[in-house]
Image (cartoon, rainbow, N blue to C red):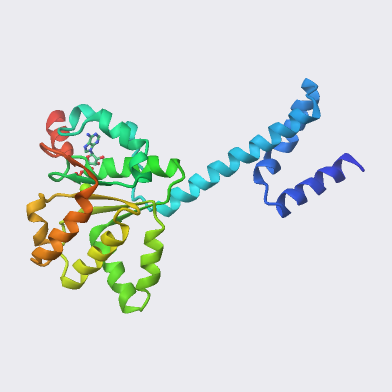
Length: 251
Ligand code: ADP
Ligand code: MG
């Protein structure tokens, strides 16, 4: 067989077998192998390693897309010195993701602009790097999606899909109050995830104020908080808005 024919057949085979890592590397690695007189086994090993790395990357890329982060905020961009109430060691421990495996919950509470969403995004990003299934969603959007799914008789499907997530990040609980139905749908979701899947919530409210979001329903709010906070790390951010402080610092 001519070298060109072998090459073309190999390219076709990598497509048929879905081996993009092999497709990209088999020729440059073959040149390297010839130049450095690698044994055949070593060449095979290098090609397979390239395929493995390529698959690893592709799962992570997929997880990142699925997570629907509005912005990518890596943990390295978080300034711990400027964050009151946030312990760097604790955050770096959370970044390892063991709490997601357990699973436990995470509540980030504090005033506006104190880095709650930034931390949630950063921890979510770390989780996708560990190939975990993550979804980031604003509380108001999540409740709207639940109500729409219920109206379309697709609630069961959405609930099952949400339950496959290793980590659900609910951002900005408390910005928009829910009506009774919305509150109940969110409650059901939190109950379903209880002790099965990890949930993270960011909120500007103190626990005592949560009832205002759930149409004044004390019983529902207590039951929800009970499940959410039972196995949970609670981080309370404090102080002035980071952006405002920066502006002042510059001006
Ligand atoms: P919150 O969700 O608590 O209202 P955000 O996380 O949205 O606040 O923070 C507001 C803005 O300030 C964002 O752009 C965020 O990246 C930035 N920010 C807040 N705290 C920090 C911090 N400690 N280090 C770096 N950026 C921060
Ligand atoms: Mg926020």
